[in-house]
Image 1 (cartoon, rainbow, N blue to C red):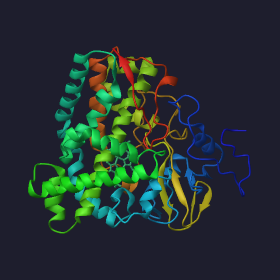
Image 2: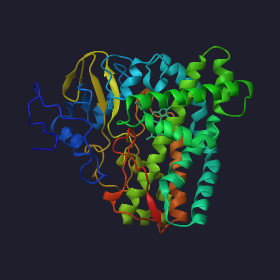
Image 3: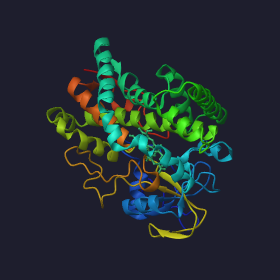
Image 4: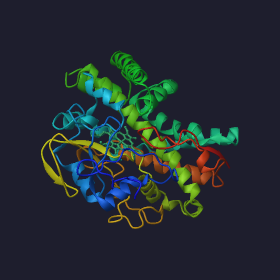
Length: 408
Ligand code: HEM
């Protein structure tokens, strides 16, 4: 029997518990999604709250799901799949959730307010600034000398500083907002703590936005207030919700990919050596790491608003869907092998369709700059603990590492 346990009956089919823990190598995905793809590319799984959404695990189905307007991203719809019970708390709140969990036309209206802020050209113009942050963090690390925690000294502060600068959030508050966003993404944190964290982050942005209204500066939050809140296109609460989404989305995923990306490369010394020898491989290596070590491995959640056929099954209106497919062998040659020399850019790590990551151009600039800086300045980098002793983020929405102890 496979690890899915899908030979056991559950109605007409088994519904294996989801998400599963990585019991093998922490850099490999849990085998469940791969097994489902082979055996039942549209399969029901059982979430912790007892609900049974479908996982679509073929690349073609996942891609189709993410661009299908019949699948909603609105978390307020009954039946919306929440991988973690604490995330489900948002369903009962009246507060604006941010456009990530909205549908068009409101989603498009709000997203349009930000597209100019994140266009590729603008983000590429930020490259020197991002490079300067990378250099300064590496200067500090090298000056302090080994050993150090690469997550704390580099992977987390880099995207945090960049998104703070862009938004107009004082970086000195990073301890506060990193703690709140960590709690909000923790599947195992108690309800009270998650609610309190969300409330505190909102209060923080409420005060910051009020301050920006009377003291505008050259930052995204000030532009949002002047351009959208003042003329009445967005309420104050919506501005606050949007700012919180940007801050959390803008540093958690990137930080985790930097940490676990470096670890993956160090675990495959030929790949690390290839990058040290030929930095021209770095843009491709970033895409390969995004595909291989997708930081939201549980899949992107949607809700069917009509009956539809997908993954060889009929999905009924009101049923949840999770799209997870970056290791599909039909699309990626040797999908379970990291290969920086043969990257494939059409991965789904940034999602697809109307919700495709808005910060994608910024994330690429940050990831490329980070990796280039680390291989150039720390070519002898190595991890001081064996894989099994490292603290992986098994219980978090965004997978990665809590710490990465290194020397060089
Ligand atoms: C490694 C880095 C990143 C990864 C892997 C990533 C991944 C994703 C994914 C998968 C989605 C789609 C979610 C869905 O369809 O349900 C998304 C959406 C989003 N991301 Fe990112 N992201 C990254 C970095 C960033 C950065 C730096 C920002 C900057 C602010 C950002 C802002 C957003 C926003 C605002 C959305 C919502 C877009 C919408 O709903 O229209 N992300 N991201």
